[in-house]
Length: 390
Image 1: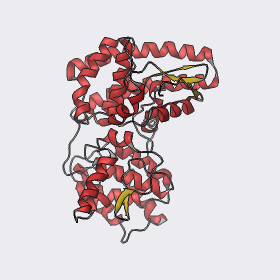
Image 2: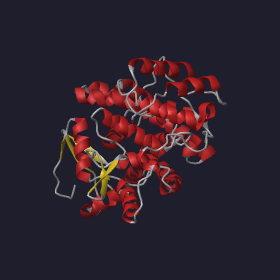
Image 3: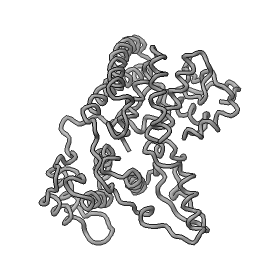
């Protein structure tokens, strides 16, 4: 799954690359319907496309579905109600003959999570599409019972901590334990778990859509430059990398001034204002304000209530907490910050390294060793062995 809000940054490569905002095409083929009331003609055509049975759409019906989305847009609750949104989800699920189409539309739909798309329903749809094409599930929503014990099926390559945390879903272990307890008590798994609805029960439009667009412009500019800098580093083009670093410093300063204005006007933006991905983008920009650790500490305090109620990724919060500690010449707690020297990745000073993985687990993160391995692979480097628990 590609995502629509870019979050890749040199200091965040280990977790953010998969929730990276795709560049918006110059002429997007598919868009969200902007209708603010039910479009009965579009709804009728959409429902007529849903065939009997559960098989994949035939080529003619698949093309008709694509044409419908080009004409009417992806349905929202205002334009099609729950029936229309769920029907579109079923049609997308059954469009398995065209994986690229499914990916493009699932990317489009994710920006509606929390507005009229249910987080678990979205995660289940995404996981099912991934598995259709032999790829691992990302959110850990597909389950099966073996010998009376529930587990993820198919088993993902790694525990989907980040993805579930990002959407505000409970940790997979906690979720499975609740389901298992219900089964052990004589209950059964209902349709809301095995095949959940995609549509939310009520429409919750963003309260600050212009602010979301503003943040989107800021993070696009931030990530475009950082992406170029990473490419220059990989290519060994030191002169270009230094020139890009100077541009990044200028953009970071401009974004920091904009963030001050945003915080003064709105506080730390919430998902209700700009969406969960928008909140994460604001947090990413804050993490790039290293020249002003006092500002970062202020932002961390503003963001703590969001993290506590799972409106903000705990992993992102942990990353900024580590940055703030290091800026105060104190060792970090979670080992999210590192340095790269002579092709080797090394974690920066870390308190109580023997227990770092327990702290990371509480923040929905994997082990420090796996994190550093991922960073090293993405940077074409190796992990420095320090013997300090990392």
